[in-house]
Amino acid sequence: MSEAPQAAVTGILHPGTMGVTVGAACSGTVLWASEGRSDATRQRAAGAGLVDVGDLASMVAAADMVISVCPPHGAEALADTVADTGFAGCYVDANAVSPTTARKIGALFEDFVDGSLIGPPATKPGTTRLYLSGSHADRVAAHFQGSALEPRVLQGGETGAASALKMAYASWTKGTSALLMSVAALAAAEGVADELSAEWALSQSGLSQRLSYTAIAVGPKAWRWTGEMDEIADAFAAAGLPDGFHRAASEVFERLGVFKEARGGSVERMIAALLGSAATSTDGDEQA
Image: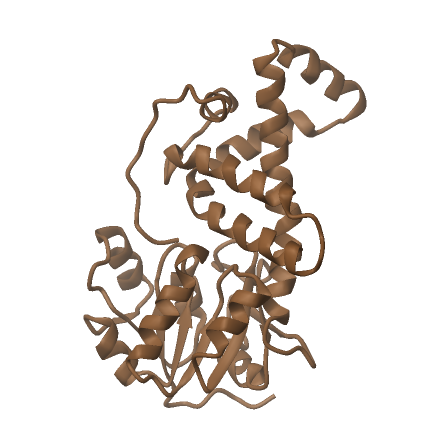
């Protein structure tokens, strides 16, 4: 595998909690555009050593490669904006989108690599993978060799392969989280929550603990998982499979959107939100 060019300049859209670690892991100079971004995003980018060039047009004009890491519902519009600038470098879409969406985005650029991220923000080696597919995937992977973000090229994989892997993976991890919280809400609505917990202790060891962890971990991120579930549902439908599982999961996460960027959720608050009795609202950063 070839080494990343020493003079490579990369633009990152946008340095949210995941995107900032992608930028930090990338070799060479990494640019970002602060226009319209929140103070929290500015602080993250500065802490990671990213170079602020002000606006998207300036960033695109200076970059050899642009990497998009944003909530999936905004991936197409962001790609359209970059394409409209006449960007002629390599565009890497690393968002949680369906293979069909990835191919639509890829059609906008002559040089395109399909990517997907699996794992938490890449703050230490061995936790997070960047899967890549397309004819120039090896070249993109070279920018991350030896970093906290492990690049994995899907050999022979065409555009859409990396996105398909993400869809399959997240359909289980996030889809089952939505199902588990819905099960707990049903039991609470019918007055059998304690009995269900007792039965889990007998026959499904660990589910109560997973429910507590899910309530804490999912709430702050649910707002951006709604679009991901829609993309997963589209992927299932395109493969001729029932898509209702993840259409429902999308609605579950939409109801939990009141906890955007909140900290320290609880099972009781998650259940209240799902049953329509939550009155919690928090402000958060605008990007994932």
